[in-house]
Amino acid sequence: MQELLNKVIKDPIHGFIDFNGARENELKNLLSDPFFQRLRRVKQLGFSDYVFPSAAHSRFAHSLGVYKIAKRMLTIIEPEGSSGNWSQKAEACLAAALLHDVGHGMFSHAFEKAMEFFLARNKLEDEKRESLEDAVDHEKVSRKIITDSTIGKALTNFGGTEFPGMVRDIIKKADKNCIYTSVVSSQLDADRLDYAKRDAYFAGVSSGGIDLDWLLRNLKVGENGDARFLYVDSKAYISLEQFTVTLFQLYPTIYLHKKTRGLEFMFALLLSRVFELIAADDVPATGLSDTHPFVRFFRDPSNLDHARLLDDTLFWGSLHQFREASDASVSDIATRLSDRRILPMVDIWKVADEVLASRSDIVELTAKARVERIEAVCKAVAARLQEETTIWSDGCYYDTYNRPIYKPMGVVGGNPQQINVSVGGQILDIASISPVVASAASFNIHRIYYDDRKVRKVDDLKKFIRETVDAELARIEDQTSAAAGS
Image (tube, rainbow, N blue to C red; front, side, top):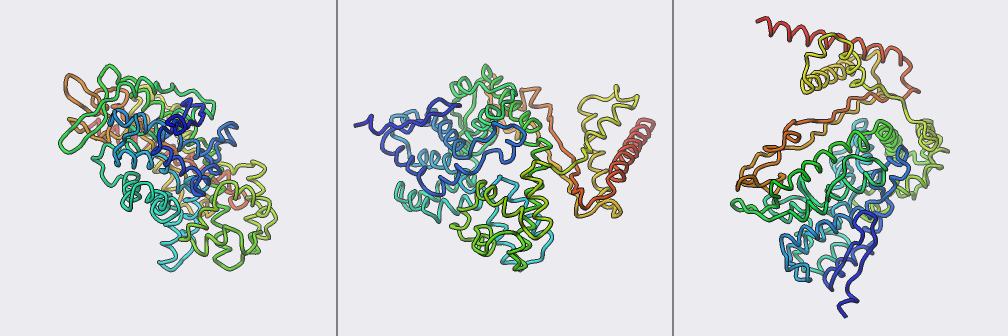
């Protein structure tokens, strides 16, 4: 009978996703819920398959992978749980691992950016604005689904009336000292451990890899006051260092790729314009019908049944309607998206890097000083550009992002939200012992995307950026020389 209760799902990353015993198979039933099934139709990497053709894996598959790793981590916390005797907290952790992404919108954060564009250009009553903001906030939507939907009912039937709140609070990180919270959400969690392997695999890129089995084999449980946490001995810390570097390198390689970010910008432009037309009660101009899910969502954003219909396939299935829209902006961007004609871009960082490389004093700068100088120049140039009204317009978009290799906490004795390593009997933050992690390296982007239908003075835009880069570098050099002279 026990064999009948052991179910497996084949996975290219982990081999098998196991659901063992009656309790785990009750959790497996969550996969059939419409809200969870929706994740099949939400790609993990949004538009990345426009750049990496095989990167079309779903958040459904990723969520299963997170469950698998979370379960392996929990066997270290509760060894007896592997025989089906999990505590209620561990069961909540497993449910949270499955459901951590259940509220993600189409194309992930690009959906939030679309609403941000719309709200920045349009004045709404506070109540309406707040409801729209909440409806695209994937963390808030996830929590609402977990407590107020069919998933919430299933969780209540599984673990009692308090159980959905326990699952929600783990995802919400309500208790950052909780070891179960750290399994799902920390700097070394099941979420990151899965997507660092899965995203690289499906994109077909090599970023050093992660020795997941060795890392998990060496995890141990420690305590520091009221906090319990996972840590490794110093002999295995290289695996953790490898993990932080691999994850860090995926940002320039995949997540912040210039083409992907350009496509996300176009999507946000298109959808924000669609929202404007719906708000103006001019739905026909969008090319959509009055009963289309986008229209229903905008008019009643707090309704989870409307949100459930919003997935990547809905957008692609509506693209031909957008192409036929009477509104020129909607039609043009939709056509560009379907034809993969990505809006052009000027990379301020690249310009600053090239200008700095041409200067004779570049050899005197350390790598860290060089990056800091370029970062300062890029910020100054972007700020000045946005004040230049003869060049800057609503057809321009400043895309910036900073991703550090790690966020050190420096808690001696261990903490659930940091990566912990035991050295000489003392548990330390990995940044305290790894020179690579301690380097405080970060990857930054400073790019100007522009709509070439609206921005006519492209040569002036590029000239302004280069000249301002030159001027800012000269200013910084003068300041450095003056400081040295004094």
